[in-house]
Length: 175
Length: 175
DNA sequence: GTTCTTTATGTCAATTTTGACATATGAATA
DNA sequence: TATTCATATGTCAAAATTGACATAAAGAAC
Image (cartoon, rainbow over all chains, first blue to last red; front, side):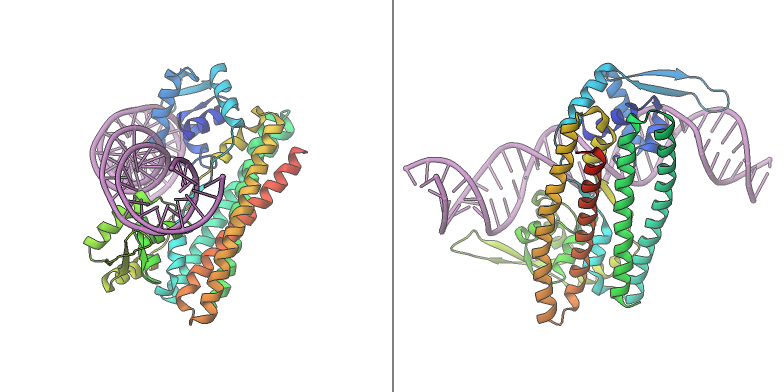
C-alpha cells in the first residue's frame, strides 16, 4: 500500500468513481497519471479494499465503477490518523531562479510571467472546485465534504502565495 | 541530463563545492539524497561539465571539490532561459485532509499542529539562509547571489502560506 | 571505554513515476 | 469526409527516487 493507494481510497470514501474519474480528480491529493492509477485499482480490488461493477454504455465506452469496502474504509481510517510525512516539492523554476543571473533579463521576466499566468489558471480551476464543494456542503449534511473543502482552501492559499511571489520577484527584477 | 543535474550545475555556478556540500544545500532547489547526487557528479564529470580536485584532510575524511567548467556554465545558461515545467507536489497531508472526517477530532488537530510545527522549524532554517545570503549580497558585488535570495524568499512565502493554512484549518476544526 | 554525531563518499535493490504506445466509441468540428 | 476531442481502460520500458547497506576517521558525550 503506497501513498497513492490511500489517495484513491480517500476519493472513493466519498462515493463510487470510475478509474477515469479518479484520474481527473486525484490532482490536488497526489499528482499521478492514469498509468499509475489503473494498475493500483486492480491491486486494491484484489486486496478486497474496493469492488467494481461493470457499467455498459451505448453512447460512451463501457466503464468500471469502483466502490470502497468496509475493509478499505477501515484501512484508510487507520492510516489517516497516523502522522503525515514531509511534503516533497519538485519545481524546476527553483533551479532557474537560483541561476537566474545567467539568463538575459528578458528571459527572466518571461519565466516569472509564465508562472504567474499558470497560477491564475490554477486559481480559476480551484474556484470551480470550491463552488462545487460549497454546493455539496449546503445540500448534503456536508460532513464528508469538509475535508475536500479544507484541501481546496489549502491549494488556493498555496497558489496565491506563489502568485504573490511572482509579482514581488518581477518588481525586484525591475521590469 | 535530468533536472537534478541542472540543479547541481546551478549550485556549482556560484563556487566550488564537494558532493557532501551539495547534498546539504540542494534542498530548496530540488529535493534529493546523496545516493542520487554522487552518481550524477560522476556523470557530469565524464561529460566535461564539471571537474574535481581531491583534497586530502587529516582531521576529516578526504573530499572531492567539484568546479563547473565553461562547457557546464554554457549548458546551464541555455537551460535556464527555457520555460519552466509545472511544479509537482507530493504531500500525504493532502490525502489525510481529504479523508479527515474519518479521523477522530483529536487526531485531526494533531495532524495540523504537527505540520504547523514543521513549518515553524522550516522558517527558522530559512531565516539562517537569508542572513547568510544578505551578508554575501552586501560584501560581494552580489550579482551571483540574487537568485539564491529570490529562491529563499519564495520558500519563506510558501512555508508562511502553509502555516497560515494550518492555523485557519485548526480554527475551522473548532479546537 | 563505548556510543553517538559529523564529515565524507559510494553502491544497490526496490519502488515510484513518467511518457509513450495501444485500442475503441461517439460526437463535434473543419 | 477527415480529423480531432472527450470518454474509457489498459500496458510497458525507461527514468527517477528512496532507503538501506557499506566504510571510515575524528571528536564529543555518556
